[in-house]
Amino acid sequence: QFIMAHLTSFCVLLILWAIPSQMEAFPFVLSELSTRKNTCKAIPSTMTLCHGLGYNEMRLPNLLGHETIKETLQQANSWVPLLTKQCHLDTKKFLCSLFAPVCITDLEEAVYPCRSLCEAVRDGCAPVMAAFGFPWPQMFNCSRFPMGNGLCVPLAGSENKLPPTKEDRKTCIACQYNGDDVSAILDNFCRTEFALKMKVSDVSEQSGDLRVTPQSKSRAVYKHGGWSEEDLRRPVLWLAGGAECACEGLRDPSGDATFLVTGQKVDDRLVISLLWRWQKGQKEMKKMTRTLRKLQC
Image: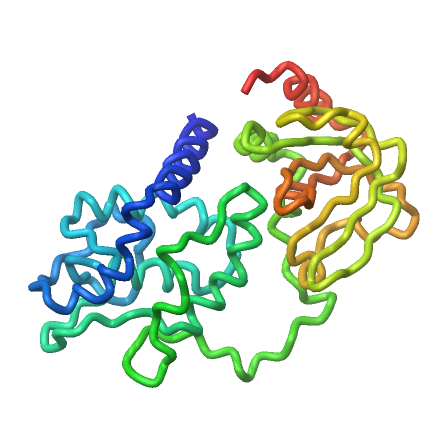
């Protein structure tokens, strides 16, 4: 049930991104909202995406043109899986500024997210979405939001924060799965184009990403989407944003660490979506790899 629920959420998310009418209509929504009569509605408890915002009432229609609570819930809740990826601290703030914008009785004009907020969330989350095959949606085109000279929802202040040291860096999203989290692989498995068990030959940084070269004897565990085992014999893999985060054992100079890696092709790159350090003798891991070989997606 857990696996099916998450697969359903991501499928719905993909469908929503693919709806052209909503994306193409977005400029119209921005220009026409000021002419519509808006009302303040209580943010429902079932709106998981926007719990704990610091305000209790939202404006309808919202900034994406949704006119009813029912429509808003249907659209907003499909974005909850993105929050679990923790790709940016302000992801919830940005999404909810559009789906559940604050309603101020004495203010007729809507309060939009600042462009800097949109750009920061986009830069943090777009690589994560791309790893799962999803582009940053046109309806979140940052150029359509105000520069920040007037009233808008700002990015959390970060001017005085020091850049993290290597010891303080957060764990890369693709590397956050522990040895007991078999469901995490099964949850996204059918959405990936490849999976392989490998040791690492070389790791280098390039434009904020990590370029990962497996040792020549890497063995394909799962093949999909036209990739042959020979294609995966010695590929070059990419960990999006990997230069700015930590991944246990990936930079091990001995090259002894073994990983199970899943991912897919994005713009002619094999992009890692999940990287799991293999523990020798781990029964669940062996059982899981047998399951992957037999799995029919």
